[in-house]
Length: 332
Length: 252
Image: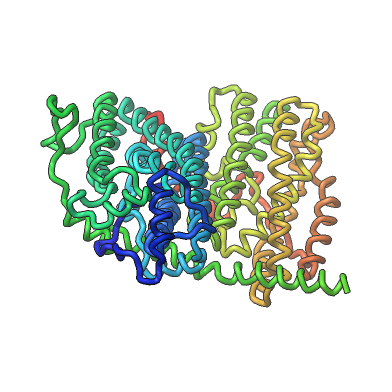
């Protein structure tokens, strides 16, 4: 799905003393020229670290993001909805796999990244710390959360790091299917019985603000944006992406008869964009810090799955080692 | 029971086995021991829900009372379900889930290999389409049985415990219902007793590789095909059916 810059402290801005200026200059020139940087190419340490953090946060978001939707697989209201939701959640798991692999090309391992997730050191998208309470939440997630993910990820298909950009190309194709299926669930509910319509409106009320917070802090308070934009790790700022999302989503809500829960929302003729109300950044930072409504449940679920599965992973390794030993013995 | 009722009942069994096992596997989503295992379990769940939809749709047509696959899945009470007791068993740990999957998919592969030659073209068509998927499920489960059996002392013990839980339900899979006699002689239904040799052979080969001891089967527990289930199925259905039951007029 999606992640954004969630560290309040900027990474090291200046070049490290050990980094030869001529290499740095050549690197900056290649990036400015929109060339892809590949795993074996020289890159500044801060670029590598920023990417590892961003890609691993993104991967963790995919994996943690399986939980709120997985919560409804056993309760999906028709066989078709169940199959589509299973396929969607599987896609998220697949995205997690490509992204962990992309991060591994930068010299970290999946186990290290997972340790950071389980210990609470690594972040994941704030949106997954909100609960899925009704079936309409599955529609809202597809429509709003995957919709926001697309806004963010389409520009990342041209991000400067080759393996990340290529992973994004695959991810984006699937996300647009997810967004459509989510909107279709909402459309059906909004045109359904009065209870169904109320369910849809309630889901929009609860997911709207967390969804527009997903784009991250406002530009004036986003410490890494300038460097990330220069390095083509990011291609548009948080506020630019947020505005795009609002402009696209508000008419969609109106078209199915739902109301966006923002009394200050209005079309600004002069700007040709919507003006929207103030975002509760205190809530955003609290959720980033791990104080979201179901943050504890999410981390506990991931940690338990990992710990309870340890014997299985050990067995797979032990069997592979025994097989290798047997093959070697046969060869002698 | 008329021939039509017998065919309805037989087709329901095929659909309910796939549906209920799919529901169980869906519970693993997001909680499996590794991302790859998570993906493969949900993959199996997804295939099974596809099979369930095809069989239940056909069952509804055979019945001719206007019930579609969703109506059959979400608006039947526990004693109207015809799945085997094996598939409704709780997941337990990964060892038990794999044991259940190995037994079921090995049986289902043998079943579809025969059913694809059914004189009922619809059943034959669904079985032929599903056989590829089920062959993959059986292979996947067998690979895990070998990994766990041969892996560590702990994994050996756990997968053994998983099989211990399941052995009493094996007999049911290979037992025909009295009403099937006509369908079997007409070449519509498969006589499940004929699948046992193939099942036993696969089991023996896999267990040898997995260093597991062959089972000593306990007294069989049966009843699923008649609607006499374990205590577990009611809870599974309560969860699965709650939305369509709570909002009977709604379309999703």
